[in-house]
Amino acid sequence: MPPARSGIRNLTEKYLERHPAEREQLNPLLAALEADAEPTSRAALPGHVTCSAVVIDRARRVLHIVHKASGKLLPPGGHVEDDRTLLAAALREVCEEAGIRPRDLCLIPQFLGAPIDVDVHDIDANPAKGELGHRHFDFRFAFYTTAEQTPPLVLQDEEVSGAQWLPFADVRSPTLRTKLLKAEADGLDGQPEPVNASAVIHDGRGRYLLHLRDQREGIWSPGVFALLGGGRTLDDPCLEATLLRELAEEVPSLELTGLTPYAVEEATSVDGLAVPVQVYSGRWQGDPDTIDLQEGVLLRWFTVDVLDRLGLSPGLGDLIRRHAADHSPAGSPSARTSAGEQGWAGRSLTHAPYSLIRQT
Image (cartoon, rainbow, N blue to C red; front, side):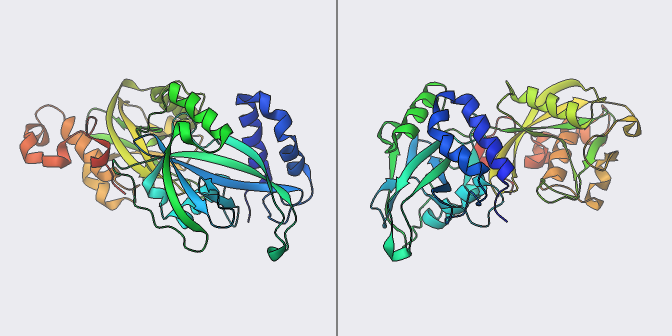
């Protein structure tokens, strides 16, 4: 199944809210989204949707590849296939053409899952493939590389003849170059940072509140116990605001006290992206059955000793054990355990380098 037309239309309208001066240029795209033909099909004329990945490394350079067919130096990209979303299509293309895996990339707070640029360009007729001249409406999604070192490239011999990492000022697409330089002035620095927020909720007596997630396709960690929280949106001014908004949506009657940053963890998105998560610690002592749960199956208190018997989201058991070691009630055996005896399992990772906290 191709990406939902409604989702593409929503992406386009939100993009135009940020770039209203481009509406006239994107009118052909809007017309394609209203036409009968599937807008992502390469057979759709006079134009169809394509996707590209704008991969940015720590040195603020953008990956460009040389397409054999055109000889042009462009970000990796191409036609939409059986992809869940346009963003997933961009990730598939950069993996196929340059060998960069989704787990080597993460979203950028300035753009998240929204395109940084939507470019309209003409494609010449290709009689050898039986293709008429047409247009591409190219949705360009930006990603940071997660590692300090630029990931090694494995170029697709069939379509790619070379690759270069270019500074923002040398990016070949004028529209993309303009947006990158503007974003750089606003903090686009190539350094990964958390784009999700969640909460370790405890009662101060050794119990932890866990959320059993729905068993549905397209959600993170379906059917297992996880922390409450979720992804940042472009409207959230900070990650604490993200968490408070998510809690208001999921458990509107639950009010935390003592909310403080605790650790930075890494999760994996449904598209395979690395997702740095800011984990907060907060206290609550209520009855989960009184909560008006809006998402998921149920909420329950659990103690550390039963975690091994639960289906948990990846890394959650270790995170809670670390938190329990740091927040044990006074006088308990674990409170008397020294940090040296606990080792890494008992340390908060709030100040750990990003490269040390990968858990997927």
